[in-house]
Length: 210
Image 1 (tube, helix red, strand yellow):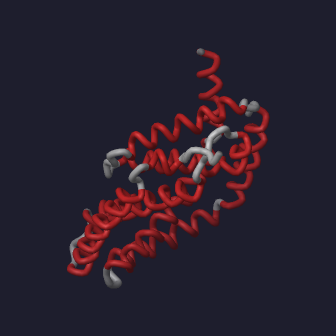
Image 2 (cartoon, rainbow, N blue to C red):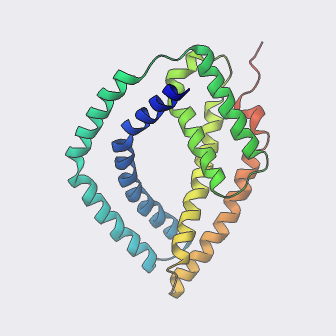
């Protein structure tokens, strides 16, 4: 047990450079999404202009570090290939089945908080690995439906982040109107997501056709 835990920790550390790149790229994405959300519900506010400036600065920094990113990715890939071991079909199917059950339980009565965002991250792990794992699984996996669910959660979460950010800076009339529009949009997105995830368990992994 101790050896296994130690190996998991060591493997987790290998991803540290990748997480750093992902976080840096995420700052660019967040600024872009905030702009698009602002434009969808309001006029050209100070908030939108601020996000445009953030995107320019973070993109410039990301491009400056691109050579270092390539080095980190190559090193990480080499180290991971040395440590990763094959997984049996049984354990792979068990992992997918257990993850879907956990997500289904959370979505049976969805709470619109960080738990929902965690469901999305779990779904993305399953979806990203499905092209490789799919042929080995002994269960059905409704990839199109699950992709719709993770995208819908992503839209809701992006909107929530924009609301949280703008709530601390909405000091002009246009910004306040944008915030009001985002909150209305949140209600729509929550309603759509509740409808989409109804009977999630049955839709995510329907019985195989006989």
